[in-house]
Length: 475
Image (cartoon, rainbow, N blue to C red; front, side, top):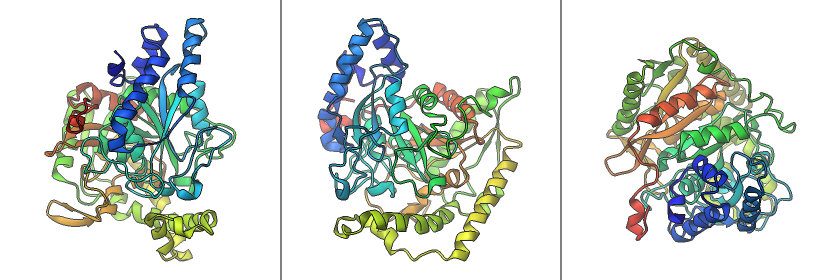
């Protein structure tokens, strides 16, 4: 039974614990064993929480005593190593912060624990969470469990790889342009970036630029992501962007009896999209049609007129560079190449900075108009499936593009603050997961979750994969 526990989602594990079919100690130990077995090849885990087994024993005692149990009671979870964890190292993927141990939990961390979750481990990411792959000087490169020669993406690649490989049933990560949704898609799991400010970023670093950073859950089922979102969202009295109560939801659930209307967009607006990715998005559109959803092809003018990634980069450079230079002063020899790349980028002129801010407002207006007619947008998450490590460029449909193009289908959600989530719906010809992205209006997470659940109900792909057999291990 213990080996089978790593195949269960968090909701099922919580049920098994509540009904005393398994103990929290068994569940935590099973996942620790899994980490020991597969992580040496994947390198997703940075730090094991020393108190995890003791916390499991306390959780077991609470079950046996008949105490009131939280929705995640006794269930292990992991968290990206940029999210503060009291008593457990949080090192920002940098040698400069090696051994840093916070005194307090980030709000998201505290909320997972208050729901009964047990922090199992912290996961890898690029230095300061600023790159599209997961590699750094402190803990090295994380590999995609589906194929060790491929990337799990970034910046939350350690979290996505850990979830995909069964090292954890559920985790929390951050997203500034792609970092929850992209890694989730590349490793075949479910990820949600909620409306900006829905989930407090208190206790997460970096916070610049604040208006683009988001925190969100990853798991292997839509219901787990929905559960985590319900626990994580809502004001905390510390993050000034987190002001919307969870009860405020603008989703389709507030409009009973009206059919759900979804626009599907593959191209144009996102640049080149690989033909297999395009086919997967179309298959998801067809599946929703078959489930009674109104699905129509759309074009969104602002996506064709404005490149969200370019805007994001112009603003990030001016805000992250001084913040990063301040915190790394005197340790320049310990900076990895991707943060150094930010330092080497010329400053954005004030004129271009202001123009970028204004274009973001135009983009927001464009989506406000779009959502007058549609309840959601179905589109790609990444233009390609998982690729080789440290790739500088891709060839898509015979044309060469920069690897930064991987963020073009996701960055618009960050500059506008729109909620977006991803789940796997296909497989590439070389066996890699392909995800689709569902974008809902602001504060309409219930719509994205509803549509994702519909797609999950007809999906035939597996979340826990067979490729670990290549390492002499069982999925």
